[in-house]
Length: 312
Ligand code: FO1
Image (tube, rainbow, N blue to C red; front, side, top):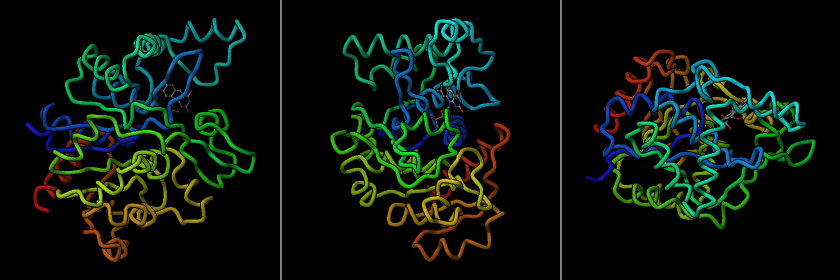
């Protein structure tokens, strides 16, 4: 059966709505396409932070405090790596390292990132389809007042302190949407933008050749949930990034970036007064609670998104 819903997601915020959707949709009815612009090599291993956050979340393994990495994690290997002089500012726990070892081993054996991700999901008991946006490498580069920084250097090592002047997605022109992403764009009946950073999580996905055009022509309802509430990102640097790129951070700034690509825009009650500006952008505003603290919140928001998709 066609996978009814195609969800686009990035890191931690997106993964929360993905969990909600996974509780309401059977595996064959949901494809989650995940940003890979944050991918990076650490200790010779291929790390895919956003794919891993979604996978661990669906597997019930995610660290609830941080949203990334594995709960109950230990850092024995990292301690030895530090002693041996390796860079350990990007915290990789022992269980996480095992997954990066296995991913790297399979990639070196010639598996595509899609095939590796499907294998890891199956082994971890994740039945829903988690798909990298592309099987070719795309790397987000932060253009800052300190020069060009690889995304994880900007985001983790420098804690997003350098002033952001621009973004570049290296390799995106030569990359293709992953096969399962391409299929979902044809067969899905609804498209959901999970509440992820529109600049560095949804941005790379929409920058892939042909994707924006296909989304513009997407026949079904396209529903977005704003990752910015009350001018602040729930988690992560989206607000600071918008401000430094010259846009007042708000749900409207997010909606502006989805103009022509979105039919219903979900904003939090905090931003109810902005609904008219969203409507002026050609999207139907839906004002509901969007903060997802509990699993019930995640399921409830997912339910509202699916209802409005059905009704659209
Ligand atoms: N984020 C941090 O702020 N500090 C870290 O040490 C860190 C380690 C890490 C390890 C594995 C992983 O999958 C994610 C990790 N993240 C860390 C989060 C990561 O930088 C972000 O989740 C994404 O790149 C943005 O969504």
